[in-house]
Image (cartoon, one colour):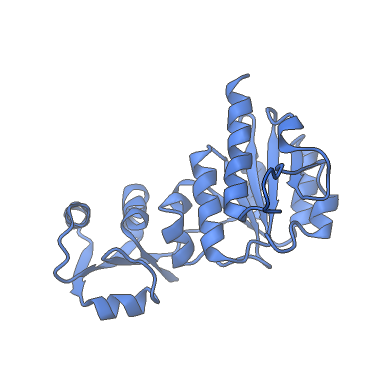
Length: 245
């Protein structure tokens, strides 16, 4: 199967990690951009087919997304599945996972994946249901991070969380239904951080499968944060604590 990826950083990431996946690339006619020129040179070095297209055609193909003058037709990247998790764990020292429960907006999903990559998360676990699809918008917002970090699609999130617990990974869920703050928690050991949707948070079974629940303290007039912003705050508190060890 093929997919469409657009945006300079997203296409560049595929070119850097797996150029064989690029089948064909459209470039905007008449666009003068140093980054785009550099990308075209690299595409030509890899003998990847390039076509110049009008803005109207590219806007249609990207479905109105901000394509920055480049749209690529890509062979789909094999996704990790639930049964790949143990093999992945065997290769990791002090695991750090991000579980995204019910993140249905592709922009938020892409932003969370980008933050996870930046924070050194070893894998992002995403339920197959009640989640945004990993589409071109996710790839664009993630700025190439979908190529850098394992994305594990699972059918039963609670079952996967039980598996992680058996592997001595502490699972911390975020919710406003607790008095304990993020900053009162020890985040230095093997860890899975669970983030839920802005509207409903993590689901009941997910909530019950956590070892510990924390919240980000709100000091001003707002009662909650955008999930991608909250994810970044939580991830970098883990980074901060681990850097002190």
